[in-house]
Image 1: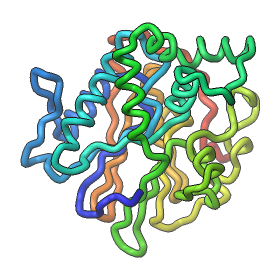
Image 2: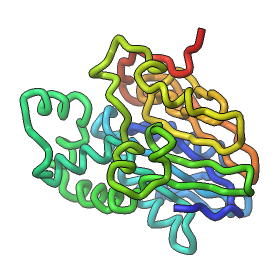
Image 3: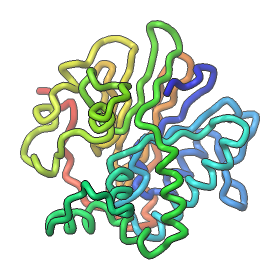
Image 4: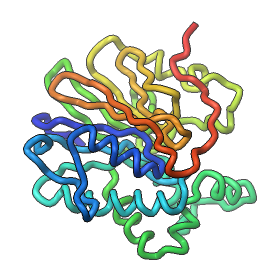
Length: 277
């Protein structure tokens, strides 16, 4: 989907139930909440839009996941009344949780998949015992797009996806391309291989131009950029920061807010991206 070029975009990396950090980050960008937990439209932010880059669920506590889903649902409806101001990108966690809770027949259930569901997709159990919350999630899932693209002029554009992918699949509409933009090859199945060897296309296809690709998915200790490839998943749920890229006309800037320790942080061993010698 092509984004209107006359607005500013706040593109936020993997939230994973870090609702307190999400609200803090949005407040830093001019979006405060009222007593009903709704983001307020003001003269300061009337030309700003929000994009969540996928994986807003899983890994957090049930309390924070509930608050996150409700906050996103209510504000998605609220902000998009007059025009689209809130956009959702589908991440691999939304994809897998959806498949579990809808009993996707293509999902093979094995002892390993059950362990993975409990370890990586804890939103499933929450939604199975909370039908009202499940309904909200299913509605949000249907609103998620696989990619967005912002084009300001011929020599400046930004493509947004959850996961990095080879350039041949970027912003394409076939099913194979969709899968590639939602999830890249698993790090958990290749724990000893450096990311730059596991997914070498990211740096090999990177170019020194202003046609950027911004993605999340690969939890990192900080924003990682190599030429026109930028990863903004800065591991909020692992006790680090929640980050955003701010697209305004033909510029990109960044902002982050630290983990607020209002829930238990996860554990993560970083496999660094763009870790060149």
